[in-house]
Length: 506
Image 1 (cartoon, rainbow, N blue to C red):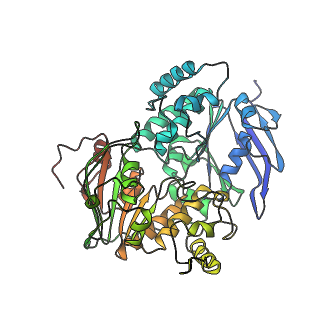
Image 2 (cartoon, one colour):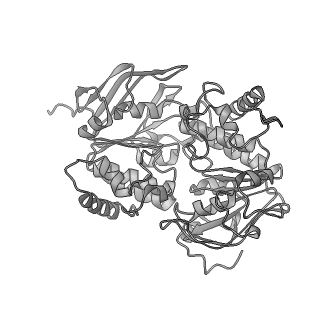
Image 3 (cartoon, rainbow, N blue to C red):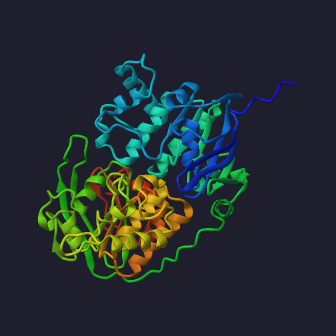
């Protein structure tokens, strides 16, 4: 009889405290060689902290870690990589001014040359169907493309344990299918996966074991293939997420319109916008689907006022021509905007939640220009309570929140402004099932109150759940609109390749 193979990784009683919060409390977990192991929990449950401890970027206060049966103390990510542990972060750790290849090179063995690394990227990208240009500067990439860079960087280290934090949150269904082929292949070759995702159907398809965290503690271990979405939700949040009520209603007047907008890309790796036409009426949610990097970012900049090169009458808010007005003037006209990049664009990382209110809200600013601090903190507190944001008060810095909690705060800040028009990019990216249901419910309530809501999302399930009409973006062009009731996932997937010419104008 051979002795049983030791666990690839085992954690016992890992505890990590921060001021005001215990992120992990006596967490134990074991991952076998060639096992895909899910870590499930709502936002702020301590999942990302635990992964960072394994990867050596956070030091635990208590507890022990064994790797391949040997006790280890991983002091930094370099040591983790030397052991064969690689991680794909939810918040990307890429240098924006460097190229894709240079970013990948930084994390690899220094004996390789840049041309070696570039060749390896081409090979890995082809092997796993991850489309990326090694020469592009990272600042020109969409979030979905950055995700691909992180995944390729991790794969090139030939990991024995690969940690994935929300890896599919910005991928299309077709891209997720491709990624799962990659991950299943890795597992079959003996690689162990630690997989964080809020998408329960993914966990049930990919993983054979699951550890559930709630408020930093393990509340259950199960085989997700034997569970339903409902039972996994109960383990995770103590309840099933509320069902959305989406009533059909007559849309009102056009509150937001793009008229024949064509814009030349601002940098060589951008996407030209070509004859984009779009309308959003009062009391409807309109969705834009598409693979990341097909012009969504350029369109959002032109719609929000970050790019003012469009002719004035190419963008209308409630019949006012605003194509050449900046974001503040568009806010005064009634348009609010949630960008896909939470930290750095949606919020200033080092500022408090209360101070971050001032980025898009001016109610707390007196006519003299002075900030009425009490009003500001009251506003921030209202959003924390209404959107159930886990934060250490209104003075907590934006960067101290988990990704999902920061998302809830930013979406809440814009919804609370009671806009005429709300543009939201990736509204529930990295958000747990309960919070996602809440955000979607709030967007539907805003629609029912007569707001025109435009959602850009790479999650087709989300778009089908909340939208009244859909457009698809491909190669800088926008498809005709299609009623959600008449659309199918297969058809939208086809349109994502630009194949809508054969369909009659909706």
